[in-house]
Image (cartoon, chains in turn blue, cyan):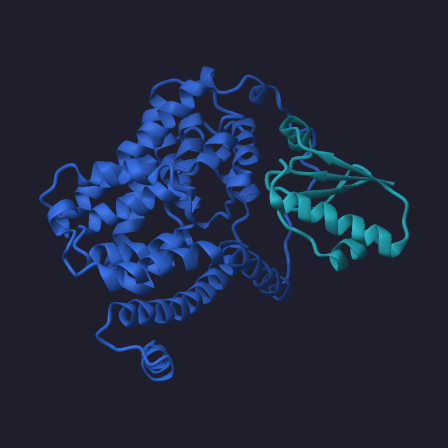
Length: 322
Length: 77
């Protein structure tokens, strides 16, 4: 599918710019041109398709489904983690979603299963992983994210942390359910999806270009396998360090994946590279600041710790089975 | 007419406010535009996705940054 892109990149870098094929600069630039075109094409297709599918699963519906399932919480956790993938989620909506779920009587643990799954199993990351590494890696990514969300939610539920939710959350009463869940026509959905795709790409393109630029630099200057002795499978601390580095970094998943592919080429174990990506995307400072508005510091700290441990665990699991 | 923009102050909410003001200007409608950033207030409207547009206490749209044209359509009923 992308052979023509490679041909174009070769032609542009080696023939038009006349940069030697064997040079570091040539190799880096070629990587940059190829990956930029390839990733933006993938992004366009992935985001558009997913946005369209997601228009059938508004959070208002998710809230109703989860509220009904409150008696049977194990099923509730699984359902919440699954709905976390398909329900549109932007970190600026995390707070109203949280309050809405609690108000509807969704148990705290189930709400957390949702809140963890939504950013952890990022649909753009999923699509890009599939496009760049194949179905196996993509599936492991989804499964591990879902399991972390379910298990973390169950633990948080068992700990009885309701008192560490900001008090005003329990005072909120949604007066009338006076707004309807919209039911747009297919044409409107297609149009809205296109508008959303355009907006999102406008928002994330800079992360993507920076990610690919760093990837291109690594491609030219860091030889294949050079990092293996530091961050290969044999270093037991590599995953831990990768996660600790990833949490304060903030980027869109689309910006991290070009790095993941380069890190693995340079010898970093797949699990280590993926846990770095998950830490960057699932735990971010802006999201913490928002969540702090509904969670008292103790619960926020517990949330970060549990998700952090989950990601580290996934990293080791990947390294073991791949 | 009182128009409320519900949202926690993220970029999307500012964009919606901008588009709404532009739409009002183009239609030459006088209206008070109020930004609601307090979650307790926002949730009263049952809105779980921001930004939302409320016209005279009725939720007209949520979870979407409306374009100037879309806001005009809503305002003209």
